[in-house]
Image 1 (tube, rainbow, N blue to C red):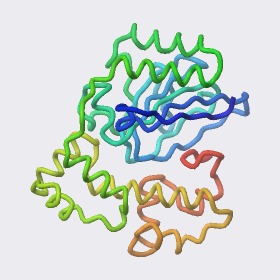
Image 2 (cartoon, rainbow, N blue to C red):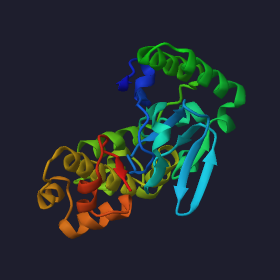
Image 3 (cartoon, helix red, strand yellow):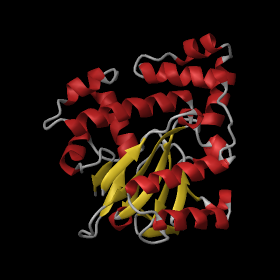
Image 4 (cartoon, helix red, strand yellow):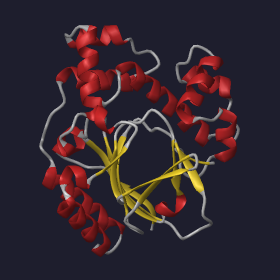
Length: 268
């Protein structure tokens, strides 16, 4: 099956970027560093009902269905969990309509979905995914289950406006100007943005720039780091390297050496 994804259509598409499934043949056991993507995700480990996160010598074990908000630091996962997995990528602010908790509570953590939806709902989702025949059928199951819990909550207009402005050019975005154009004081705008997206406007723009740099580096055989920094809106290469290390824990050069088939997954 490999990796397949489907973008949603209709009203939910404003809050859900895609649903996806991934199936890989078993390989040598390894740990992988997962970089912050600027998106919240729900992930269902179908091979086993467990999620493991590695923090130095400590292993955190959670149920196999978890949701993580917009993160600002990397995490280390077990590659075995990627053999049979399904998930949902939420647009910024999109988790509010499905989980009913303020977005900051999901940031930089993995929260068992059973704590938010209940054990029976998560068991039903998992059972339906396991019973579905083929990747397309599993994508349909994910859509149907999301539709069943969706509260239809809309983003605050100022937040929606800001997300469009920041997405158009995060390197040039001026937060004060965006707040003024949205009709809010900068303080009130920051509070509203953080409540719905999970991070401050400044941190969100930094994540977008970082992700632009990751995408360029992943797609180039021999990345020109000075050019990457310039095109992604960094003042200079020093600022670029500082931000890259802050989010990934490694240098751009180490990323190039350890990159995998997926841009945000890096060998340890």
